[in-house]
Length: 126
Image (cartoon, rainbow, N blue to C red; front, side, top):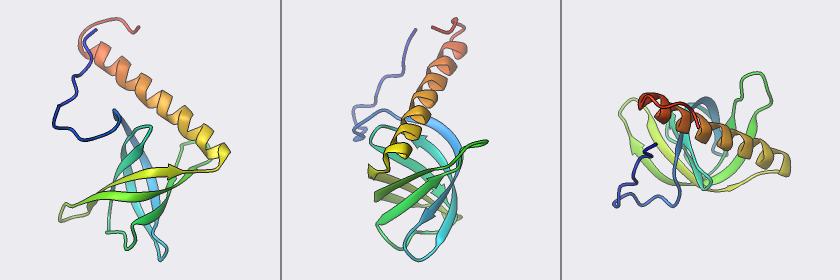
């Protein structure tokens, strides 16, 4: 199986896995709706309908059929899309319970990515 090769210009500290879940971001003043795009052991990438007013945010990831995951972190980049914002959050902190749920989500996301690559290449899942 051939795994994707990391771009040498990519400055990320960790590989990302694609995830599509609803999120709410609390910036200290309001709640902003959005969609989680990817996750890693070091951060999150998501799109929002509006720009957060603070660099320190709380992110609630909505898990279908389960409790949400609440993570606190620091915005490390933002891109204005004209119709919303792409945001990257790092330096994640959470309760022990939410850390465990986040780890489960992370493992599931990376397994789904791995099986997706296998399917695209016509290989059986590992």
